[in-house]
Image (cartoon, rainbow, N blue to C red; front, top):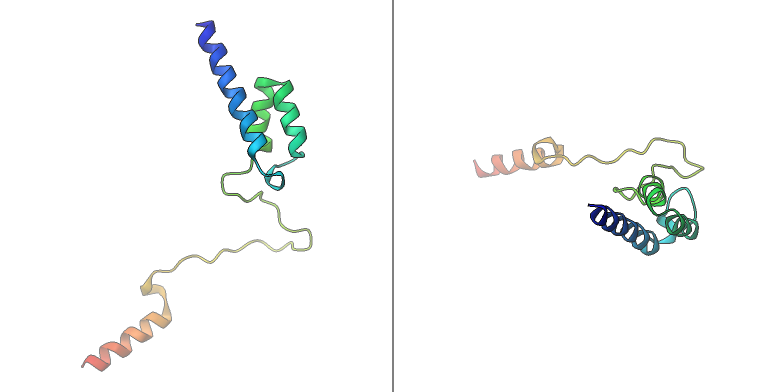
Amino acid sequence: MPLLVGLAILAFWLYCLFDAITTPDEETRNLPKLLWVIIVLLLPVAGGVFWLLLGRPSASGVTGTLPPDDDRPVRREVPRGPDDDPDFLKDLERRLRDEE
């Protein structure tokens, strides 16, 4: 049993170390990449947990921060279906009239 725990810790440490090394510099969060690699190297379990929670790029690829000169909330264009697009509906009405 202790062997399995040791192997799991080793696998976790290697995964975190490899992930920290291969992550591009500009995508790391909170600390410089080199410092994250050192933390993961020196603190195998705690450093790996810190890396995954605080240093690794977020899943969406967005860090959640806005540029310093822009404090407006980010609004994304929500995709609309064809029945919500006024241009599509006008074109559809025109085509239906043309068929009659």
